[in-house]
Image 1: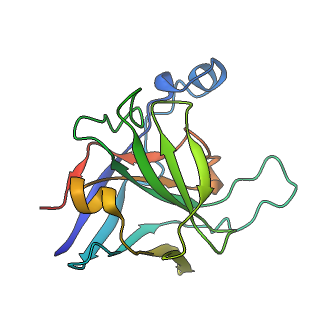
Image 2: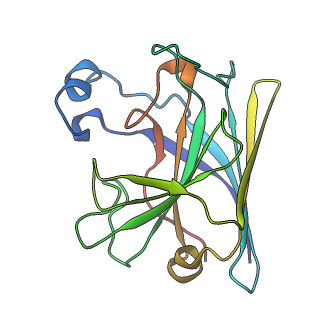
Length: 184
């Protein structure tokens, strides 16, 4: 199975963020910092996937250290665990989603699970999962190798999120695909 195309991204709606601060402080955020990503998915018959994301990023933010006003570039792939799980709210009670999350300041990705906004749980990725990022000439390329990602093998749909640290993006402040992306 192979899939390659450019995906338009939208700003994650600030009005949907849990708590009151982000909703008010970023109410005027209407343009995605990352308007598009190149997405390439190659799958094997045994359920493993090689997935590559590429996007424009003028200034790399690879580390924040102890600076609380700096944020790190990152990206994530989201997959429903049930056929009716909503993508925009990161699932819902009884309709979970699973994600693999890469940050520019980490060697290993995280595996994440949620059942709605504000419920994200983060854990170490399985041993067969890896992510490698490279920034060159104003562009990120991140390659995920995901051995036996059962949710994606069964559901055949992905969501994409990108955070650009130079724009203060973190947590719910991000660019996202506008729907689940069917892989065929």
